Length: 221
Image (cartoon, rainbow, N blue to C red):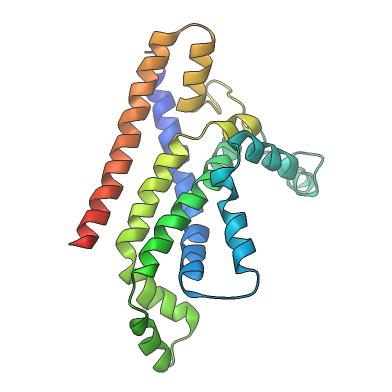
């Protein structure tokens, strides 16, 4: 195991945590929307939201690179504001968050689909608007599913590689995550060190997945 193994693991966990916090709002809101609402273009929007789950991660990374690179309007605006994103820790977070949204969405959607629609209808009858119904009825009733979605989103972010290496690279001490470090060490023949990092990654992913399953089991009882 490399000397900086714990540092790499801590950096990866921190980036995954921030990415999960960023992925939760769009994932949960879209999950609720797709669970209960019908509107023109819903199928197209839902399919688009799922693309990071089914596309090659490097392809998603390339799209992000084109969107955020200095030649793009967004990249130029960021550059003018003095914000450097590509090949920084911010790019790591963005890549992880984008790849986590579909997992969060699917898990949250399943939870919202289990909410009895009569409760939402009663709230609407009492004069509550869509936002208030979501915040005071739907979200609390699907709370455990949302928590499970957060754990799964964290696990997905932690394992992200393809999109991350495209827009953040693998700069040791700056943007190198567990997945990227495992790849780099294997490439240079340091397989024993790579195995050590793999075990750390396995422990973190197992813990997050176990927590998610535990939360969902408690919801079913």
